[in-house]
Image 1 (cartoon, rainbow, N blue to C red):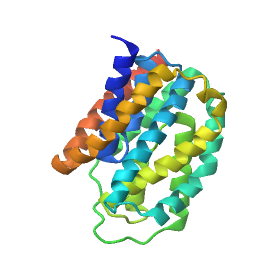
Image 2 (image 1 turned 90 degrees about the horizontal axis):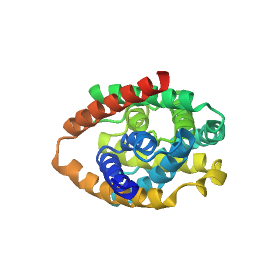
Image 3 (image 1 turned 45 degrees about the horizontal axis):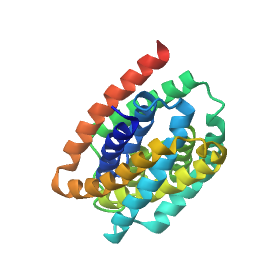
Amino acid sequence: MSAVILALAAGAVIGLALGALGGGGSVLAVPALIYLLDFTPVGATTASLVIVTITSVTALAAHARDGHVRWRTGLLFAASGIVPAMVGGALAARIPATVLTAAFAVVAGAAAARMLRPRRRADTPAPVRPGKAVAAGAGLGAVTGVLGVGGGFLAVPALVSVLGLRMRDAVGTSLLVITVNSLAALSTRAGTVERLDWAVVGPFVGAAVLGAWDGKRLAAKVSGPALQRLFAVVLLAVAAFMLADAVW
């Protein structure tokens, strides 16, 4: 199977998950790029940031049109993650490939476990804890910078539990946070972006963007928890494979 067809298929799946769940789909971009398209771990994390940024902007526009983006809250949350994202992006190239792969597997496994846990319903705003909000935003930025993931699987629960957003607003606002953090991380990798295989990354991005639109429509028709559980099981299997590959 050609690399372009694999890129189109992987991009469609990742965009679908990102549009439906407001995050999490980007976690599959790195293993897809490494194991299906033969990218190095560092190249995969850089390409993932490009894919995540463009796809998130597209999905963000759709959620914003429906009034489910809390702009001020999202920008304040993202601001605390900008510097950690830039530092993480600069450090990623200095981390050994096996360590980067293992770290990604651990984070992906944690994301899957988080998705399998019942989410707290936020029907009324909860008191905002500034310290926790800053810490959560900074941690999210660091994860984005080092591992090349958007961090929506962390942003959505943080926006619900720390900032008291309703779930639909948290999903939309997380896309704003993902976009800001991904752009910050990419700013430190400008020299590596031009060396990407754009014949593969381009179709991957295009399929992901189209998938994100379909994912948003799918979320309106299919049970969110059911989609989340299915995705979490797939992600858990991918995390276990990557960890085994890094260790052995």
